Structure formats: C-alpha cells, structure tokens
Amino acid sequence: MSNQGEGAYGAAQQEQNLELRRAINDAYAFVEGQKLVQSFSSISFEELLDQQIERIEGASSTRRPNEIDRITRVEQDIIAAVEKIKKMPDDAFKKTPEENGVNTPA
Image 1 (cartoon, rainbow, N blue to C red):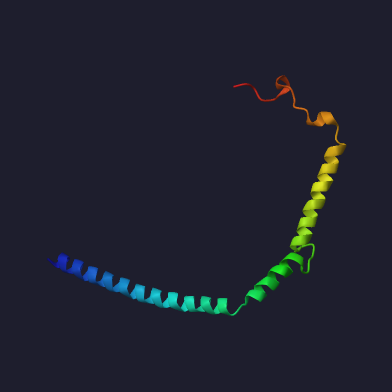
Image 2: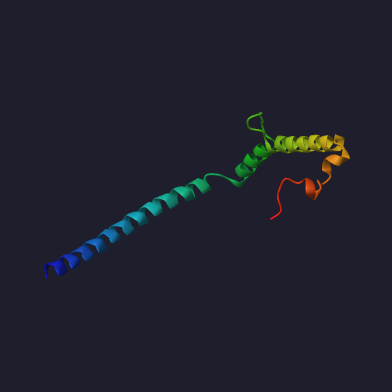
C-alpha cells in the first residue's frame, strides 16, 4: 500500500511541477513578447526603407560590397566567361564519341 501512496504523491508533485513550469513559461513569454512589441514600435517604416537603400547603393568595400557592386561583379564575370568561350575553338564543345569514353558499359 505504501507504493500506491508514493504514486499518488508523485503524481501530485508532478502536477504541481507542471503548473509551476507553465506559470514561469507564461511569465517569460509575456516579458519577451513585450520586448518584441517595443522593438517593433521603436523603428519606423522610413528607417527600414533607408536601411534597404543603404544596403543596395550605400557605402561599399571589397569585403562588404553593396548590392549594386555585387551585380556589377557578376555581370563582369559573365561577360568575361562569354568572351573566353567565344575564343575557344568550335571542336572544344563537340561531344566525344561513345567508344572514346572512359566509362565501361553496364
């Protein structure tokens, strides 16, 4: 019978622990939610637009290029690659015959 008493006490203790955890969790969620609301209300739409404009066309360096510089670099790389391809001989793009392939048939 003592096992049943411990089981009831254990279940009651477990229920109390869960209630305490829920209360602490609710309080923590409330505090974090309020912090989030304050952070959203502390920045304006115009400030967000200014940040995006700065990201797109603002100050740039070789380590942290802005978006315009990144696009320009990609464009230059593509143009350089196309120019190299144009200078290659036509037979560089011919498919190799099957008998010269290195893979053995299955």
